[in-house]
Image (cartoon, rainbow, N blue to C red; front, side):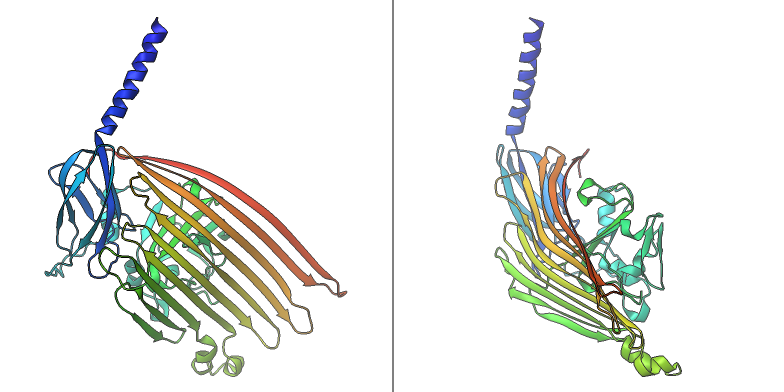
Amino acid sequence: MMRYDRFFGLLALVLSFMSVSAQTGTIRGNVYDKNTGEAIIYCNVQLDGTTLGATTDLDGFFVITKVPAGEYNLLTTYIGYETSSMKVKINNGGVTYQAVYLDASGVKLDEVQITAASQQARTTVNISQLQVSQRQIKALPSVGGEADIVQYLQVIPGVISTGDQGGQIYIRGGAPVQNKILLDGLNIFNPFHSIGFYSVFETDLVKNVDVLTGGFGAEYGGRISAIVDIKTRDGNKSRTSGFVSGGPFMGRALLEGPIVKFKEGSTSVSYALSAKKSLLEYTTKNLYSYAAPIDSIGLPFSFTDLYGKVSVNTPNGSKFNLFGFNFKDGYNNPSLSAIEWKNTGGGGNFTLIPSGSNILVNALVGFSKYNVSLLEKNVEPRVSDIDELTAALDFTFFGNNSEVKYGLEVKSIRTDFEFVNGLGLRLAQEQNTTELGFFGKYRQIIGSL
């Protein structure tokens, strides 16, 4: 009899929980700048008259769960923008999506600066994780007047770099190969240029950089030292813009604009293109004319960086990106040898917000290739390649003041090495590896906004 009492008691508890859940609903949405269509990150969203609220993430996305059914005023506030108030209706067991467009405020407060980092710090505590914005990178003194993420990494505790401004980085004693550098989710095998001054990343396209020096989740795969996760922003959705700049070390160019112009409540398509080219092989002939070899050939280092991205943003918050990159370095000494190495790759990712569901879907498909070539006089080239194909899918479920994230990742890795020995025999070694990883993460939110 005791066994049946326990069974019916447990059944009653489950039915009671389901009944309470059915009497509440969920509201989620995105917050955008009304004029530019840019996502507004870490802004406050609250249901007026309640303690229920949330802050937006890097995509301007927010979720408020466990909301009793009824009608509410949805208040959205952010420094520099007019407060938005709109009527929303929450249904029992339903999911409501609401896009919010904020107007820039007509009053400018020069004395007050609120950054994304400070807003985020008030709502989230992260262990061994640092978020770096484009503004923070540009605030540091830079070589040749060109700000770069390499220079910011060097001021982080526990990070040591070789070379003047980069080369390789050692984080908390780990070897450089134990650092995972990601660009829009794809692995960049060698993110630093030969001269060590700069990285391959275009600072003006950086949206956010997460530097994790410990305690990072299983979704980042097999690294034991650190993760540097770099995400790029979308191109300008409202107008075409760009710049061209030059200095003693390199020249830069950026072009961005709309393909389908942003309009409130409609789909927009934008693009961004960037290019960087070293000038040392030309400028050093004049800057160091007293050195005979340099006077004739200049410094034998060169690099060229190309990056492109097309972004599609839909009215319901879903977004799709296509991107590609080609980062090339070279050392060319005509009297000795030439070495070339390059990172090439591309792919697509999307964030899908299914209507009427508490799930957020993210996916990535792409490839990244690293190639090194050694060219010597009267000797056959020596070539080494690493090819990595990545496919990842993850889901985020928003429960009652909780969040569950789970997913999988498949990698196909091919390494190839080829050279000709002194006897004229061609030797080649090729290896193929497949990695499959799963991860799960749970987060419980205690208290209100």
